[in-house]
Length: 257
Image 1 (cartoon, rainbow, N blue to C red):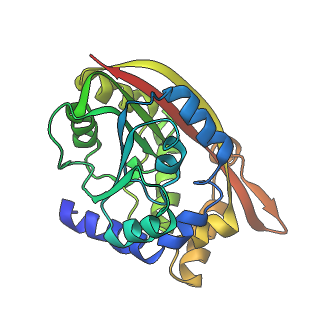
Image 2: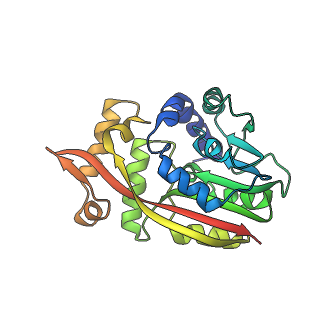
């Protein structure tokens, strides 16, 4: 699939579902956001870029601790909706921007963040290269995203579930793949944290699914999981219906050389 076609799907999906991402419990998880801020350790004089800001949760969380936050997103409708919600935060600047082709000069930011978004990027290597380019030497890059298992069969299962539910999904990378991209872009891993994240199936699937038929297709695929996938993703059923499952989420803080 061509890069532009993929990105149009992302814009279409997120433009239609902008408000759902503002109110999403997963994206607005205050415990995780507090941990993100603590890990980044922002300073008062910092200028920070939040890539693929979505509902603006990271940007909002950082505003008390830094000088300025640039909240960037590919989808104008998403960004406009978030800007309305955060209109009272005077140190946030909203900008439409492609994560793989950022409209900023080299070495512009003290920190760059990106949370629960890179699985939508068709060329994650370009995203990491761009994040590194706009960071100042010694600047901090903080990534949070769902990651696939290292085992190919489990990774394929996870990405198929995501793609069935959201056609704008590209691929969840594994931790080893992210580490290779960090190394290639001159970023040194400083802190990492893993956690199991629970998706409550009814709300998760309806965030992007466009029809009851699509929801049934996602559920039917999950129900066909073999024993290895059912155990790894801890699929919970009730009366034959999917209630929840769990995926791996990875937080990585890197420092630019």
